[in-house]
Length: 452
Image (cartoon, rainbow, N blue to C red; front, side):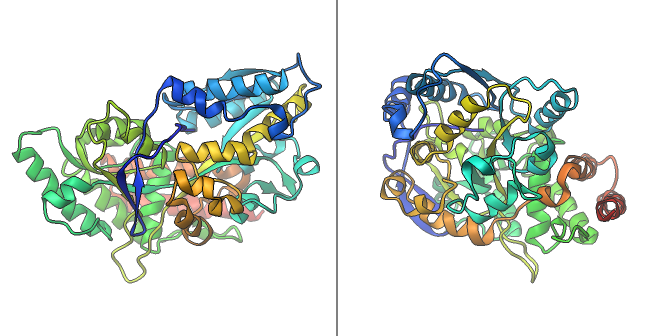
């Protein structure tokens, strides 16, 4: 999870051609004043008869998250008298999922509540408390999120916040080098990145790169590679009926394209980088374009950022072929209660607090899209995040989803096989054609097991 409070000031964000005011100031005092808007348990319709009890939550987080999470839990404790212990497993989602599964399979889960990636609902369903008796059918939630968190009729988690992958670009550098608009296709991205990189290096910044993305062998690479192939009509790995949906020839071509970026417009270390690694280079002023999640916008506007006031956001490029489309990946986190929790009543109150409209409005301040439909037209949300009104259309109509619910508990193995094959192609251990062909055969076997 990546969370920051936001106050918009005066720079331009471009999303789907919409130019809106934006910016960020933040401080420890700002965090507290934002959280202090939640004045009482009554605001959230929370129980106050559980005072003195405790609940624990596992929160995967990036470095900027800690201060916000601590303050948010402090407000929950003040409102309810329920003490919260935060367990912090890190931010590599591949490792976090392995840790969660080890806990559950050993019969010794460490927490009552688990923040889970959007793609883990199927993998963790058997260990989750059914939330439907308490929270109903989630009819007010974005339909895709409600479907994602419902496994065999069981509501395994509540959507917490939603993200969509986007393209960040240096608006000042596009003007400097004569580009009237950000790249619409991957080829245009490559061309603009090469031009800007060459110019910046000529001006003395030898550490400048054209394009940053996430190439570490992890779920982050699954997202990036799915964006490439889906934008060209190469499939989403599994179809709705569980059969293989993968055009290995298109995938191989896209993996080759990305391999050619390495060392030319992307740093050689890109195959070891996750989102925070990209963001660090970006904030240092060392790149023209970056693929990342919405949290990176607020981070780009912090006082220590060299790109503050120079950043804009748009859709990821579409494919160059006749089947080309935009293929921004749906992301986000959900909240799940362990079936073995001994503190389920306190855990339910924590979920009510974190998923309430009030908390979602606070999430909007730090750049996280709401999970309920009505908040996309809420004036208080649109005031701090004007582009959310258009982002809603992407979430409902255009975002690409990973086949996690379809694959169920096998999604982890599917994703690992996929990003391992992509990584081997990117690092040159095998050719892209061989890697894609091998994964295609593995996928066919996995799909046949799924049918069984």
